[in-house]
Length: 87
Image (cartoon, rainbow, N blue to C red):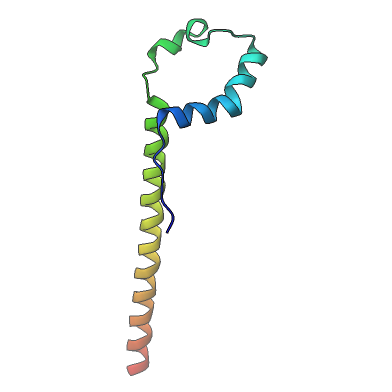
């Protein structure tokens, strides 16, 4: 059984920092992005975590819908084949 871990702010921040933030800061020559970008003060805490978690929930719902659709399509096909065979 695979245990799922929830994404929290620290994990997401670490992933972003590790993969992109350090590179961007070097390339853009930005020491304090929260002061250099006008939009930074409008970004609420945990905003990225909220977006990522919403995306994961959406993906899980989409996957479940697809799985149910396949089961439903198979059931409809099976009923059709059974009715065609009895005719």
